[in-house]
Image 1 (tube, rainbow, N blue to C red):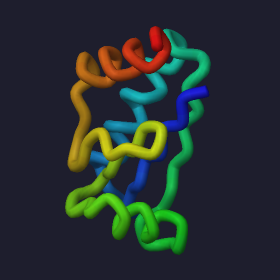
Image 2: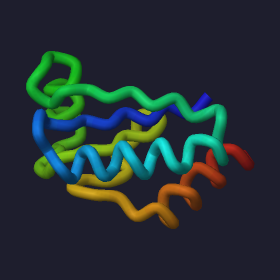
Image 3: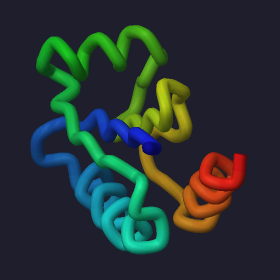
Image 4: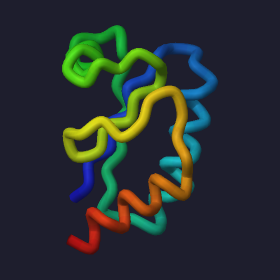
Length: 86
């Protein structure tokens, strides 16, 4: 199982775009579980503090910060491939 946590803020267009990319990639990586967290709620705020997320959204994969402010689909696929092939 690969856990992807999307730490977003309400009304954030970058957050919506990243969620769209995650959902586009999901069929290629069925073991990926996407969890969206509001950065202003306790669970989201904990990740913001822990990882120093300064731009929305924050993307945390298996407990490690992967990206903030946006995402590159190619880099995401490469990261997920590395996790599924280990």
